[in-house]
Image (cartoon, rainbow, N blue to C red; front, side, top):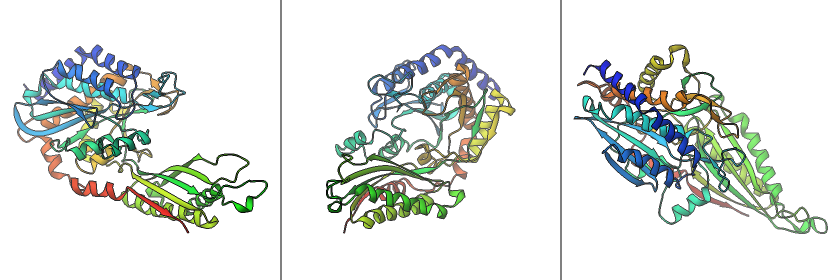
Length: 439
């Protein structure tokens, strides 16, 4: 078959299975599950994979599942990734009444795109050199951290992020390039865009411990832990003029406990925060300043502070050659006027970790309204939300693996990894630590 015939067949097969693809997305949306708990969601993917008579690996990082479409000849391996997990937003009308879980970030559509790509490729894979791994991965949303810490304490996981854990387990070792897509809200029409990467982050928890006392009778006997936090917050704010604009630094704390009673000098105050930035170096530099500020708050009033720092996700680096190829195929489907490149994205994803190790892309897809993670997030165009990204992915995979000197080989040869796998894990481990300061 010619390249055009292969592509035509792939698009036809996706259209033939349109109802199955859309129904899968809707079924997943109707039963949201948060990270490392996505057992029913994985079963839905397994049901389709099992009907294809392909190699399947199940229970990866607890809930992950991957199916492999093998070409007739050896060659590069392309991974198409979809994320299984939901997030928590009790205010969303579709939120689970008990857990508050809801797919307000579009992960339900990602799984539909991944499976849809498989529908497009499974009957033409023998025309390609190499293989395609369809990988449904857990736990992208960095939430429910107490539960994940429990899994870590039990030895069931090492890392909080699903892709981080799968990298650690070696489940990406045999994959050469990675492609996934993400929903973008308030993007009118059938539009897609490629960002200039995203922020990475680390997560922090701080507990200030002072001395409780009667706030009216004997405040002088207390050590006000809330004042310690306020000094620390002021110190963080005072650092902001040292953050470079191009690093897109974001430090955003919340108070999770401000005291026990209004009539008691707060003796126990806790806070959670993220430290985000565009580069690993900027994250490290900002983290040092935040630690210093937290210690300064405790020092200022004579309290103590315990700081727990957990590695989050690395900044995203979209591979230029792979980006251009995907966007070229997107233009064929949605038109050149609906395809664009934009600046960096302020959010974070564990796909960033992948792109430090292998060529990868994370394009954004329209068809949704309402802000990401908000109560208003919803599908506005089913064809774009469930079908068109699968077509773009399938066309891109065909371009990557077609011919004796396939494009995937050139892209992987030109790519320089930021870290080896061992160095990557060393970095994550170095960004996870506990620190206690007291007089």
